[in-house]
Image 1 (cartoon, rainbow, N blue to C red):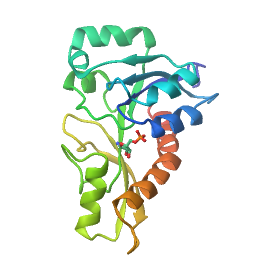
Image 2 (spheres, rainbow, N blue to C red):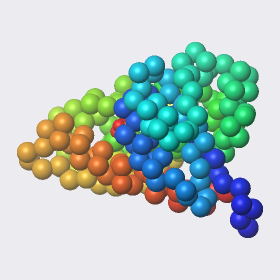
Image 3 (spheres, helix red, strand yellow):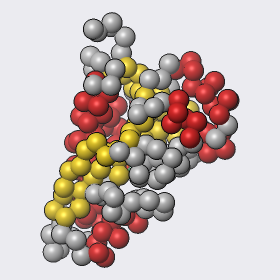
Image 4 (cartoon, rainbow, N blue to C red):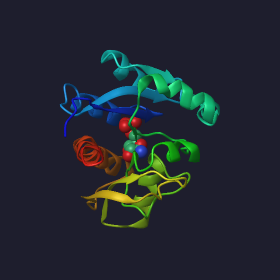
Length: 195
Ligand code: GRF
């Protein structure tokens, strides 16, 4: 039954925010999901500009604050958040937050997990490792978030071919293209079936 209330998602990001931007664009005037908050933990995170441009509340939350359960949950309360999507968020999500949002936190990783994941595997580190390994296919993974880096249940993967001419930069660019075109739709499908 559709009660008319939209599912309210928060985006957590640390970096340039290109995925966050695609998610914000996709859910503009969406019938079922609303991006209600952008949270960033690096002062210079580019994601701020997308939030401001789209009049979405944006809060700066350093890791120290994220790890203070009572205060953090209280500060989230006014936004009535139903779920969280990580888009280039580099810090570990604390256990209390995972318990507060069971199966309602998603992450995207720019490789085919379980390979090329785990602590320290982010940004160019992932694509360097993929390139040096000699594999001919990379890709992206969307997964639920648990208390370990990149270990939650996988809900979607997409393969991206590597040509003999691909260097880590080109691999990163190709994967990011597919991230932009798939993550918003995966989020849509996932949360539609979760409510
Ligand atoms: C993406 O490659 C994503 O898979 C990873 O971090 C990167 C974020 O890029 N988790 P951007 O900030 O969205 O451009």
